Length: 338
Image 1 (cartoon, one colour):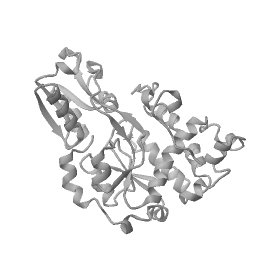
Image 2 (image 1 turned 45 degrees about the vertical axis):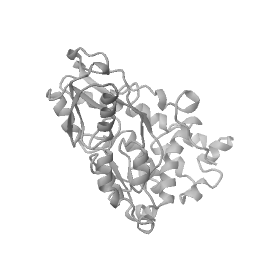
Image 3 (image 1 turned 45 degrees about the horizontal axis):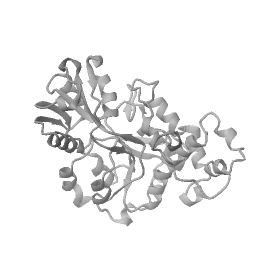
């Protein structure tokens, strides 16, 4: 699901689009009346279309939140399904306004492609899935295995590092599209399927017999996943970044879809600021004072988005873990809205 350095270098020459060309994304969004959002080609819980073409997921909610903040209407989003190979070029070229597609924040991507990561909306790590019939209990038993994954992703680099560090042989079987990887693994063309552990949880349900497979306990990498924008437009960068922070800050302050109207009358200065009753946060972003109110009212806080898309009561059954708020044992730490 993540591009390799080899493919990154192939498109790096096109990365640094001029500031003049990149400036004014907010104006462009207002003029056309929607946010063009780059998403995956279908990953349940993160960005996935139903039979009627309606998109849902944590990454989709981030797109909807940006639309609520900028246009006052979370429905004003158009989605561009992108493969791992296509995603960065689509953002660099201006085909999409924001990339919200389970994309890992790395040094190369942040410095060599003319792109900015606007935060992390899901902390993940790479893992391995195998058939239970294989009798494997941990990744150190995978010597000589064939491993399926996405073509041109850092997943390839991570798995190479892991097998090399542990002096294990393996055979890589790579495909461009995620569904091709799933189909190949399901058909028995490889012994192992590797990607982010959240992706394994999601893709397992596409297998013919999901219960015949298991995810091994090892986590072999850090995968901070989050939205990405182009260099050269600091206002748009700030808007996407603070959209994510607003969802986190709202959860921290106990503001949700059900009580946000009541919370506008709170005496808490922090709540007044985030909901636009006081202060200039919206003005400084070039948005209306009620920008964050619109996010919470129409999309919800981060916890609400997590729970309905990937949480314990969904098919993915992913515990919050490190994706909890900082004051609840996790890594999610919104910057102060003041």
